[in-house]
Every structure is written in structure tokens, then in C-alpha cells.
Figure 1 (cartoon, rainbow, N blue to C red):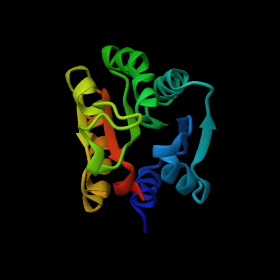
Figure 2 (figure 1 turned 120 degrees about the vertical axis):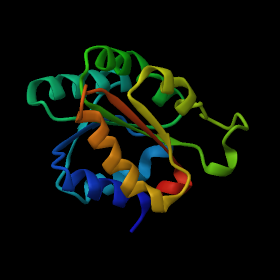
Figure 3 (figure 1 turned 180 degrees about the vertical axis):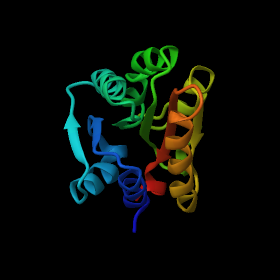
Figure 4 (figure 1 turned 90 degrees about the vertical axis):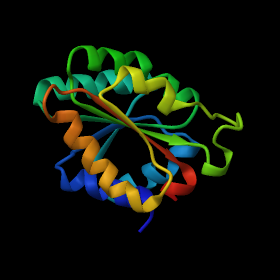
Length: 163
């Protein structure tokens, strides 16, 4: 089982029915895993639109909205939607693809410090560097997002961890 398949399995076990997202290279393992699951992918035209769609879903259902985007500009495009949801206490889990672990901090193609950018503005932010941690981190992300005062949890996953 790949890291991406493990994440999709955890989401499915938590009753996630929809994932809102826009594909890109660093997130392709996730999109491939969704195609083999009962979770429905709602394709958006822009990552920010995906966050607003997940926000609306969460407000309407009371369940966490889940967003899936790629690295770099894909992740940075989510910031406005993340801030909107966080300020309004909307439960959301944002899964971001990331460059491979060995390239972190080297200004690699489409690398952005998603953890650093989002940490001050969300309920919790993770950068997962070990595939064995993925199921636990995603379970925590869903729990943290909906518990207490709801909010946004970001999970940044390098491509070598999700593959």
C-alpha cells in the first residue's frame, strides 16, 4: 500500500465522501488512489475554488471538508480559502503534495514552505516525512479539524512519502 493509498483509506474510514481538488505532479499519487476508492473527486478549476467548495460543504454538513492540491503554487493558492475557513471555525483538512523530501529547503521546482506559511494561521499544520506516520497524522488531522473549536488542518506530504 502506498502512502497516498493509506491516506485515502483513512479518509474513507472517517466517512469522507468527497474530496475537492486540482491535480498536479506532486499530488498525483493521491489522485490515483482516489480513483480506486468510493470517495468522489470534485474537480475544481483553481485550488482556491477547491477550498471554498470544501468550506461550503463543511458548513452545510458539519463534517470536515477535504481539499487536495499539488505543491508550490497549488498549495499557496489555497491560503485565502484556508484563512476564511479558519476565521469562521469551519472544519477542513487540506492535503498538499510536496517536492521529494531530499529537496526540501533547496528551493526545488514548485517547492514552498507550506508548513511554515500555514502554521500561524491554522489549527494545526503537519509536514510528514515518514510514510509510516501518514495514517496517524491523517486520523489526527480529521479529529483536530472537527473537535473543540473547529478549524483548518494542513497536511503537507512530500511525493516520496506518498508514493
